[in-house]
Image (cartoon, rainbow, N blue to C red; front, side, top):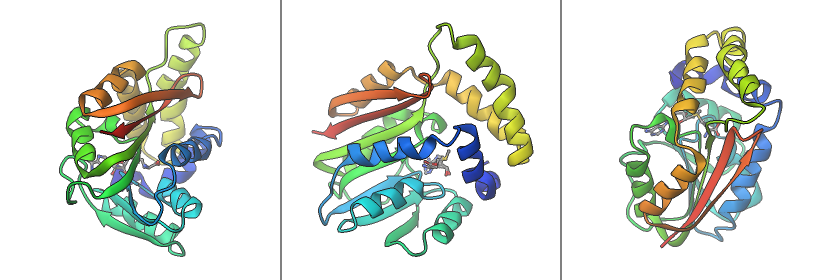
Length: 219
Ligand SMILES: C[S@@+](CC[C@H](N)C(=O)[O-])C[C@H]1O[C@@H](n2cnc3c(N)ncnc32)[C@H](O)[C@@H]1O
């Protein structure tokens, strides 16, 4: 699915979020913090936006962007060929890195797409150095408040329609909204971070409570 939508992924992101998505990615980078000259990993990097912002903000670090979609990685390579980032194929459920390698691991919109968030978070905990930072950006099921019916309507019809016209793939964007509704609530996800061994876990919501950024520290 990600291989298919790779060419239109960035345009779709900007339109769907009304230009807000880069602001959330910058928040992720600030939460990850300065790695000094150490290694940092942006997992499920897709077309590379988080990795690129991270490299711009902390150019002394060693930057790695990993994803299992080769088409996404090739978009990332094209877009940020002038930046010092290593792009690598890798599966988040079985990372090809040694224990205690990274100062920080970031990931955007990954956990909603895996069978078991805990398996991935444990794997990330393994490759982080003690005291390293984990920062996760993802969609979050909206709360049942006054905005809920409008958000549901946008999820049910608005986003899939945009997907049909911009990405020529309505199914991928119906999947996005469906998987958001089925995903862990923000507090539940924070608890899974704690189960994986992270401490100082917290989160912040954006975009009428439909986007969440979670962070924590590797114990
Ligand atoms: C919605 S995109 C997000 C891309 C990027 N992080 C961003 O902020 O826009 C999700 C990415 O996760 C990748 N992905 C999903 N499951 C994965 C896994 N098990 N291992 C590695 N990458 C994965 C997909 O290939 C896709 O590029």
